[in-house]
Image (tube, rainbow, N blue to C red; front, side, top):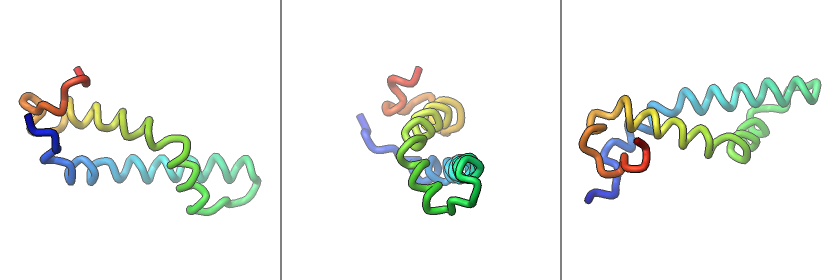
Length: 81
């Protein structure tokens, strides 16, 4: 059994836009609540602390089950059915 994803680079590249969107949404929400721009660094920190795990798990599920070219033969996909 191979326990290293051979498509990790593709997974991470595909996940980038979703992560950036999440950071921008957090920045907008945090700025609105603070009534001033909280800045990109604060939004990144918040995203990592509050959202990253959920986003990563959900994205990996979708990528591994629906996008990855090895989705029908990958041992790492187990537990995502």
